[in-house]
Image (cartoon, rainbow, N blue to C red; front, side, top):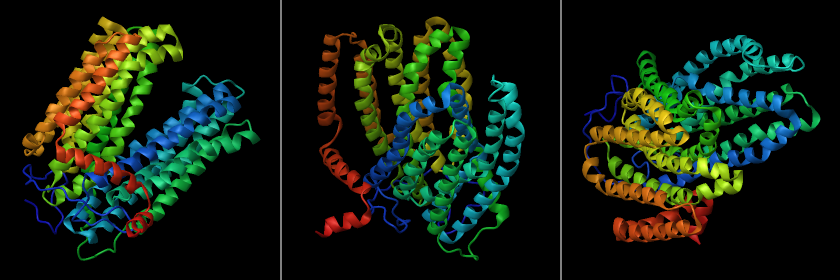
Length: 548
């Protein structure tokens, strides 16, 4: 077992598999100071942090729904299409930090858990410097390739050619900021400053759409809109840099590890994170491309419409695991105390939220598609939506064991599991598409999501053996939830069918509350609901309320 006051000698992929179990402890809310390294917080604190993360992800999406039609009207289809590609390109550039952002979050949280705060600045400086140096050749390549891509890969009208080439080239200037921002956010995540992160992220994320809106009334050109978008990125990076530096504790030169030992650890951890970040979205989205290639674009349309909606549900598990990762990392640095208990509690709460959301979606989704897009989509896309809703429950739950493995210092395990899943899923998806078209693709996606959850959870059991006893309640809840959702899919798409489904769903909710949840857990959920809202308020307001 590692010592508690020194840096581990090999890279972070070597933690011991055995970890004694201990009770999770509650901590004070997130204030202006750093949370106690001995107490990363229990489920109540995690819920408040997850709510902040959910707001930080959802509010910019809501702004986008309002802004996109206005931008489309002002820019026209061609310019708006280029703007969308550039926004997508900027977003995906973050993968070129080679996982160093999350590696930085891991090592800083690990230092906090071991009480080695004097080492944190060395990890921070090493990560930021490495990312900045990596960004420079990537920026140069972006400038050189941008013009070729605009002219060779896109069908651009002669009138827009120079404008589009300039737009693709100018984004090279924002590459360093795009790569630095996730690492700065990860630093604050390691200090569990989630309220602060999202108070910055909400306005800056909204600015990606609001800044172009401020520009389009004065110009029809694309380049000023791109520059406004880039200005928002730069301001976001500078804001996070300011707060990240302020969060760092004083350096301890005597305790700081040597650079030659820090950099290999960060690159090794980050390399496996990069593998995960590359293959995970590929396995989530590959089916729509296979469907278009093996069947038809019409079949892909009937699949793509519900899939684009269902995939948005992933903001819920992402909000949870972002808060869970530093919490578990700190616990594993303290020999895993309370990790299994918090992990199982998080799984059960997330499962309940997913069933509450996806159950009604299975019942009313086909009808809603018919009202929105017509009877053809109700008939062809309705069953697709139901299977995808079932699959998203399993896929969402699979994020938690994946992040537990990373937090325990084993980022290679989930990455290798995804590599092993890839050929199996492509065979499964191809077979489903050839046999059943869009519906076959949806069934294959749901089956793959269930297998993914099983593999990741099985690896978590191996890493944290005490989960076998601690997780029994989750196993029963998962089986009941899967059975319930499959039963709801069997109800006919009619008024009487939906009414019967609502009654079953209500009876299941009451039964689960009484049978699957203990009296102590019910009391805890009521307290959690009150505390989760309280975590959203500033500390000064909470203290004044308590004092009054």
